[in-house]
View 1 (cartoon, helix red, strand yellow):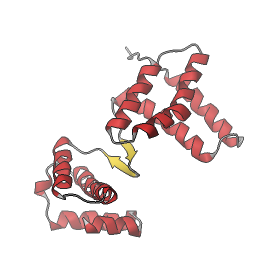
View 2 (cartoon, one colour):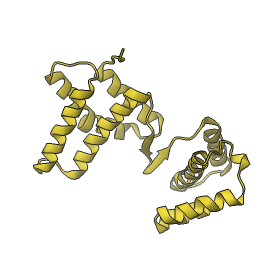
View 3 (spheres, one colour):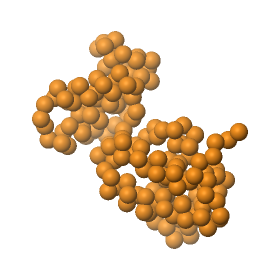
Amino acid sequence: MAKVIDISELISLVCDKLIEYGVQPHTVWSDYSYNYRPILHFFQEHGCSHYDEGLLMQYRQEQQERYEREDLLRKNYLNKTRAVSRLQEFYSRGDLSHVVAGGHAKKHINNANESLLREFIAWSGPANPKTLLDMEWAVRKYLFWLETQGVDDALDVNAHSFSGFMTLASRKYAEGSLHDLQLF
């Protein structure tokens, strides 16, 4: 049997999770007003108060048609479809896998690595908030990459592991981002 959840409750859970992952509350509530409340209204207009994948896809299709008619700017279209994707993911997984907070994509890492990252940031001492965000971004990327390579304990790494990460990063990231990675 499929789980039933109130669409309003699901939207609130997604917004709470975004705040938990570091997105500023005013950003989340602005996003709610422009991207989630229209979904809620769409469901209400169709007499549905619970999560319904088909209805959500219908909403997404209408946004795509608005974009194709040029009734919706690309940025707004992408924001609305991202809201749809987040609702789908949270409904199916109970979590969000990709959140941008503080201008950086936040990859989710295991609890041990998250603790190690927090310890590293605390150890780094007082620094400019932007520098701390850059440091967190760089270290999080590395720890996430280690996990994708099957290394769950960052203490098991060696120079070869770091070299592999930097080789991949040099093909993937822009010069400025690569510079940030090399600093940390």
